[in-house]
Length: 144
Image 1 (tube, rainbow, N blue to C red):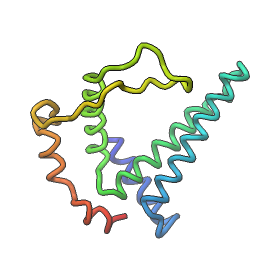
Image 2: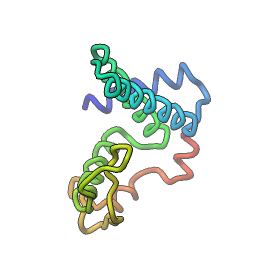
Image 3: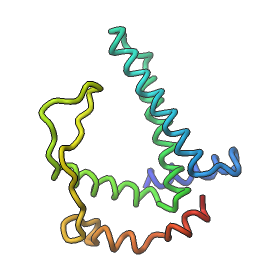
């Protein structure tokens, strides 16, 4: 799968280029890149101009690369991250959402929803079964 190959390539490069970087440092970098993406899109919206061709896509790719490496640092394969995305989407579909966004343009769910093993499945397994196959938090900390 191309996503797994990308995660492996990113991790190999980043671990050589940035030895000793922690998962917390990687998460902070992801926050910065997310802000850059937000600022690029906000600048376009405020000025009414178009973004430099592909600039938004480049910022999205930065976020993707960082997210994939962070997942790897925490012990999650790209395929697990992708499947968790499908589970989360199902959860989002089951939530209640406001009719209008807040002042920042964000729609935030109105009530929490709990994922239950008997409702959300990945390849026939409940989320709990999948989590049981992953490294423990302690093992993931050793990776980070």
